[in-house]
Structure formats: C-alpha cells, structure tokens
Length: 463
Image (cartoon, rainbow, N blue to C red; front, side, top):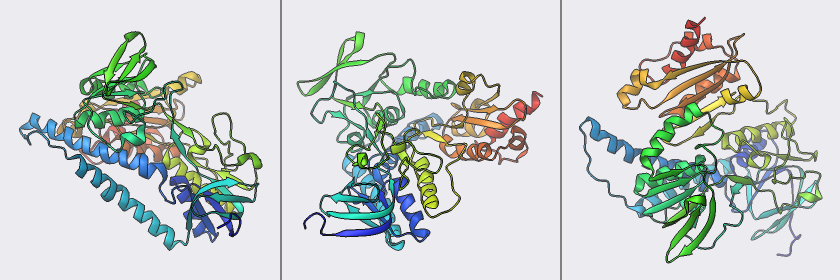
C-alpha cells in the first residue's frame, strides 16, 4: 500500500492505547463519537498493563506470599524452603494476569465499536495525521487526544549495551534470579522491584543520590519501609551517586562514588520515567511539548491547539494510571460538549512495597513550605488490634487537618493494605469532610480502617 491510499475520517483519534487512551476512547464511544485508537503495538493497556503496574503487582504478590510463608514460622507453621520455578512464574504472569486483562480490554473495545490501528502516529497539522508501520494510512479528525505515556529514564553517560543492565521493563521479565543485584534509584520502582528480587533470593544493594528512600514522600511514612528494607536488602547506600558502569568478565562493575567499585551480576536502573512525545509531529500543530517532553494542558485537558487534547504521563506529574484514566474521561466529555473538568482535589498515590505507603491531598512538608497552619494526628499501628492479629504493627495513619474548620486536607498511611485504605481517605479529602466526620463514622472492628477513625478521634480529644 502506498502511504495516503487510505484515508479514514473520525470524530476523535486517540494516540496511545494506555489507561488514559483507552479510557478516553471508551468514553468517546459511549457519547456517540466515532473513535479510532492508534497505538504502536496495536494493543490496549499500554506500559501499565504490559511493562508496569500490572506485571509488577503480580510479582509483588508472589513476594508477599513468600514473605508471609516465612513469617508463618513465628506462629508455628513451617512450609519448608520455597522452590521457585521461573518458567511457571513467567507463564502465570504473562497468560493468567496480563493476557487475561489484555483480552478483556480488546473485548470491551469491540463491544463499543472502537477500532485500534497499529502503527506510529505522526501529526500533519491540527486536523490530520499519518500512521506509519504495518497499517499505513492517513486519518482526518475533528479532535485528537495525545495519550502516549512515558518510558523509563536513563542516566546520561552511563548507558552500556548488554542485558545485564536492565530497565524496569526488562526486570519485569525476570530473566533469572541474580545472586547480586544493584538497584540504581531509591524511588518506588527501584524499591518495588528490589523487594521482588530480594524475596526471590537476590542479595540486593540499592543506591540513592538523596539522603533518604522515596524522595519527596512523608518521612513518617517512609521510616516503616526503611526499617524493613534495611533487614531485607544487603546494603542501602544513601547520598551516593553511580559514576561508572562497565562490563567485567560476565559481571557489571559499578563505581559507587567515593565508596569505590563493586561487582554485581545484574544492575537495575530505576531513576524515574520521562514523557513520550518526541517524534509525534506536534511541531505542525500549536501543541508544543516543553524541554522535558511534557504537554501543558488546562483543567479540561486542552493543549494550546483547540483541536488537540492530552492526558496521562504526556502531561507530566504525577505519572499515575488512575490520574490518566480520569483525565481521559474528562477529555472525552469536554469534546462531546459536556460540562466536565479535571478539578480533583485528591489524587491518591501508592507505593506497593511491603509495607505499602499511600497518601493523598496535602502533606505536612507541603504545608510547612507554604507556611500553612495545620493540625497533625498520627495513630501508630502498634495500638491496632487488627494489626496485632496480622503480626504487622509496622504502620502508621497520619491526618493533616485545617485547625480552624477541622477539614481533612491530607492523609498518609503506611502499612499492609495501605493502597486499599487510602480510598476512604481520598473520598474524605475530595468531599471536604472533617476529622469529626471521620471520627463519628462507625468503622468495623477489628479492622485496619479503624486507624483512620482512631487518628481522627485523637484530634477531637485534644480540643
């Protein structure tokens, strides 16, 4: 086929099939808009489903099962030493988890009559683009939604060839269980995957440039994870910079700043993610990414080009799938003429380590930087009956409250299941509930959710 032989006209073309992209496409279709998705891999789910959120959580579940089996020895149950079959593990992850969800999304797209075209989208102005690849064609559209997501970032000057240096995508394939694994970066990706490999049997060393793990996250929450990391990992080097990586006799020699060189079987580089907007031809439109590749959008997900919208990681931080999904629905509704806006107060974030860390709304550190007066309440899980029955007192629930109105401004939780518990907190912050509202709401006993009530009650008692 010669490029240009086929021209398709649609109401909306969505560039990228990740969470933001497919959410936007499905909502557009529900609102009666003829919608086409252009995705390089001709797939729905994006990096989240195939190389990120879903496979990593599957592996973290395996790590949690191994940890729980080890912890069971404390109360008299011994399952013996675990035997790990990597082929079976990889097959389960690929077919029973990722494959099942992938087939489900394809089925939804078919039922909503959303077509998916494989290829690279390149804009040719504000009303058209060409698709390069196995299915070349041109698309004319009334509106476009850029949902191209992000990719793992690298460390300039330290790129080396060879499969012993992995990014997060490669690490999720679990090619083997290295005896010695170096994790470069103490953020959520590095710590989640570091815990997976440590549970599988690797001796993990983590290197972080700043003075603490999970930079930017509340220290009251991080301390519980840091204690577990210290026991679980071989070494944790803070305020340390990787200044060199080189292959050396089937190993990787890493220079850890002033600490000198150490050798590892594999290295995982997990230093964040970057927006993927390069090469889209956006220079032919009024929508221009900044130096970081990020597209600026307003509260209705509109770029500087009236015909082009953008959602998800392409619009910058926080790079979270659930933010992208909400933005995708907003963009679709705005295009359809609905009175929609991305005006959410609380965007919850979760680090799926063990223990989990979750938060939403205003943090104590942010309030301090803004000179904003707050009241802080903390409830340590050591006083939780349910935490005691689980043998997990390593947690805390923290509330940030406006001192005048008593309104909840932010919540942070560290402990097992924090990612589930934060939903109640997000509702409370989003709806402007007060600490008293939380305190007088009856919570089931004994549960970990009671820690939110208990923290709120401690503020009422201080009046």
